[in-house]
Length: 262
Image (cartoon, rainbow, N blue to C red; front, side, top):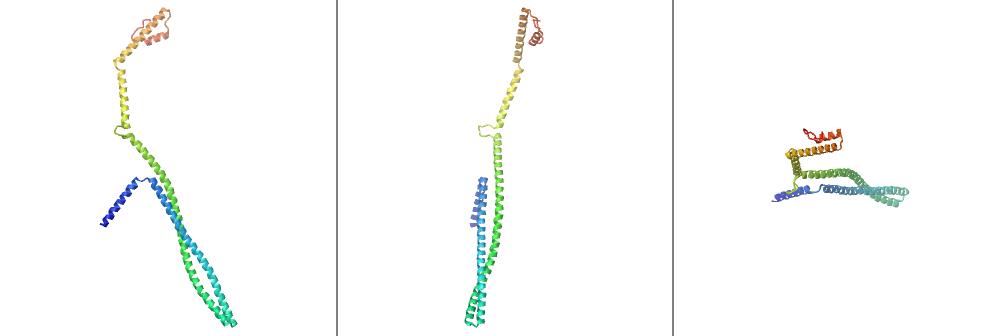
């Protein structure tokens, strides 16, 4: 039962995650990823700083212990020398005192040597850890810079994708109905072309009809009468017909008729 519940929980988690990723804004997700990478780099730098601080602190302790060791070593040597001088002078009491002091100093010297040895090992380890931390910070900084550069590139691609999607949507709207009562662009175009074709055909039929020919004949008659009347006026005035007038008369007179003024 517990195993089934875990499977069901994992299924719901995967489903909700998929739904969220499908509806989430890639730009926001990209900003979140970069912010997380920057925070991770800050945490890494802080950890590296702590490691380096430990290494520096160990070095300081080692240097102090080395100074103490040098001092105690010098004290031990001086105590031995003074005990030997007292023994040579026959001062047994002083020789015993200096010898005991030399032994105490030697005990302290042994303890310092042990501490120095331990600090040297710790200093070596902390130095190696410090170098590794510095290398990790440098490597992560380089990776972060690459992510920032890739982010700018992805942002540019995302803007291009959005623009292309808008263009595709606009193109689709030209070929698809916006609503139930709105015709498509293609339907409107076909309707206009159909009306244009019908109007053109009607005009062509009108040009070939009997009415059109009757209008032409009526116009020719009017032209012939006007030409005859002009010829009569010229004759009354005793004017000779000119080539230009004859040309106008012939043009105005329909083919097959004779101008009375000639």
